[in-house]
Image (cartoon, rainbow, N blue to C red; front, top):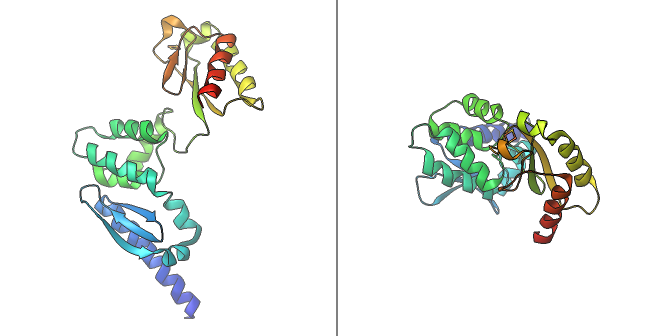
Length: 217
Ligand code: FES
């Protein structure tokens, strides 16, 4: 075996060891400056387990599995809040998305370990509901309702208008999504911008709401 072979083998063994440790303990692996640390939401303090020198050995796989520390820190805090509650998965996913704007794919392993579920179960719930995102969005989230009541009151035209307006240069950065009922059926068509609901929308009202986003950005 050459030296390069033995380094590659040691690297691969260390990587799977770290992943196994995190998966079985419910802990989170994070990069903090030059260190990779193991953080457990139930235990104060952080255990430093390897250094950036080793991180570079892991290459792109490591980068993909361990995004920036801050989102996973927040995930760990929320897991600690929910882990002993019955039926914790959906409330936990909602809280993570409310806090971060998305549920990081790297959090699935941590959530599964903490709630005693399989990764497939967590992934299944996360991908079943259109509400959940696994990637951060660019800009404020604009959700136009395209369910029956809103559709009957012009939401398809409103959605097309939104696509055109948001594609224009100089428009505030927004992420446009379709949703299917915002609970405002009696005041259709409805939409949501960030966490604010808007009822009886028209293209003109849409333009004003989006322009106000630029003013408040
Ligand atoms: S159908 Fe649009 S809010 Fe219910």
